[in-house]
Image 1 (tube, helix red, strand yellow):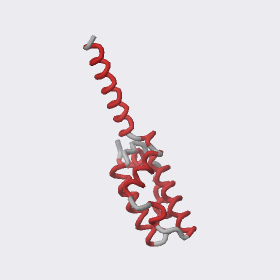
Image 2 (cartoon, rainbow, N blue to C red):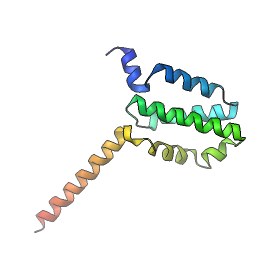
Image 3 (cartoon, one colour):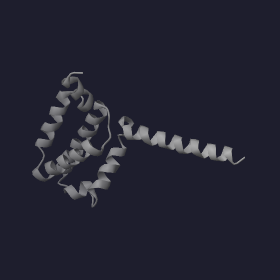
Image 4 (cartoon, rainbow, N blue to C red):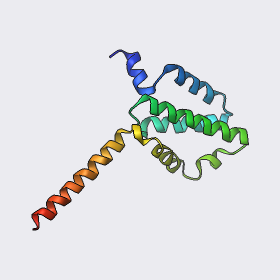
Length: 123
């Protein structure tokens, strides 16, 4: 697989990526710093495994910070007192592209199967 193919799979269309980065660069300094911090956390902890979902998530993040900056809202008004909790809630809106969602489903099936075996064994 070529690096450009890998990049497209991970981050989607390069044009969209550049547009997103340009939008973040235009934010006021405090909103830009916050958006970059959230982006970094999303890249490490987001668990999104397809480029389309990742780009949609980042574009929505840019929308959120652009709107809050335009409204004169503080960064804390956007992310609240617990930024990690905010980002975790934000991520949950995009878990259709998440490898973690698939692993959660596997875990639930495994536990359900173990419970069924337990019930069956106690008869």
